[in-house]
Image (cartoon, rainbow, N blue to C red; front, side, top):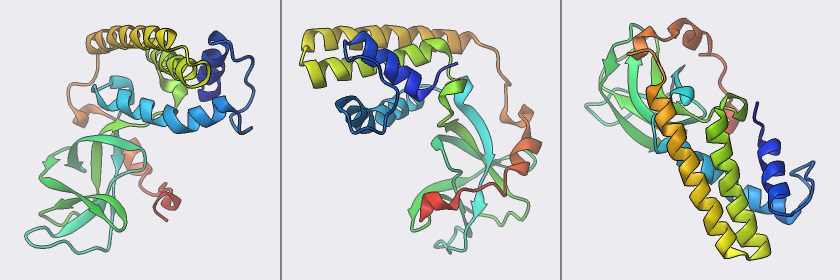
Length: 205
């Protein structure tokens, strides 16, 4: 089971940077991780419709008033990286338009929905949910960052980037062959409804 620290520690060890036990020590490894890691993760998660990262989570109705003909603005769930579509409580797709607002990323809709809306798409899932090949691809990318940013061994950095892309390609093929629900309506909407009150509003302060 992958962890962020485990991925970084392995990348550091494989590039000759010793043993890493924390990412809060202000070291070169820690600083490069802050600068690059989440960007790499977002890049990888959003370039393919990964089944392991696909979720249906409840949206939150805001008090904002959109311009006509739109009638409501619903805030996207925390962790949503790529929206596939919005659906209602019955699993029916909803016409919507994405907006950037003072309350964060939202979707404007044409009808009032009293029972809630749900965002179907790719989410920033925890490393513990990543397949091994996906995690290894991220590790190779971080190895490339460490080789280029610390040792300035750019040939080795390019080689690690090549390995990362090969591993990512294999992960895509495996993911495409994996079985999944054919429609979001088959997913566990009850669980999504139960998460409606679990918003981390601190993310929007």
